[in-house]
Length: 93
Image (tube, rainbow, N blue to C red):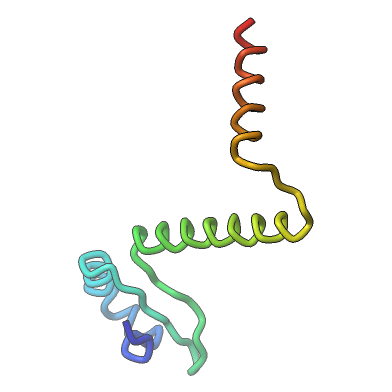
């Protein structure tokens, strides 16, 4: 989507709020609302927002994992699974 086509002044939002909400939700769009010529808010479909938040969370996990690798804070998968299995056995006892 081109954001340049999704920029509207706040007066447009005020005059067409029902139409804007319907268009955004039906087409999973994002709209940028301006006030006095400056971008002020983003109006976005909730599903698009949730997908964005999930993507950001995944990127954060990847960045943290990369940092852990650089610091040498990791163990082989076989060792990690063995540790988990040992914890489970202790709790079941």
